[in-house]
Length: 160
Image (cartoon, helix red, strand yellow):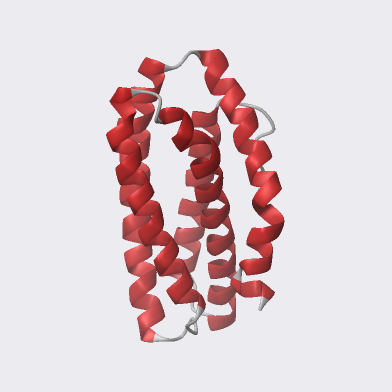
């Protein structure tokens, strides 16, 4: 998947959101258990990498602003719920009914999180931060993703 090389943090996060949404669409249409497992591995890696980078870069920067602090706390709780689901799903076979139920819950949860983040948090951030700050955070976000990527790949279902 194409990754942006430059950009402000909000644009980079939106790109990640779009990539995960495409993976969700593919996995919902897929019938092959093997292909579902491959797609889940990609979803696991993308969501884990994205969440860790947000938690390392984006969320700490947002805590400095009163307008976003409460929103960030809720977003972190949503990240934690998604992480738990991902870990539970990692232990199940893709043809297991519980896997399918958890997948639907994961998709709904992530879509809700994305909507809140893009509508509420991004709006508050744009009102609080200058373009230069958003660009600098974008660079930090990409560096954080690159730094944690080897650990995420090692922990992914495909690495088993």
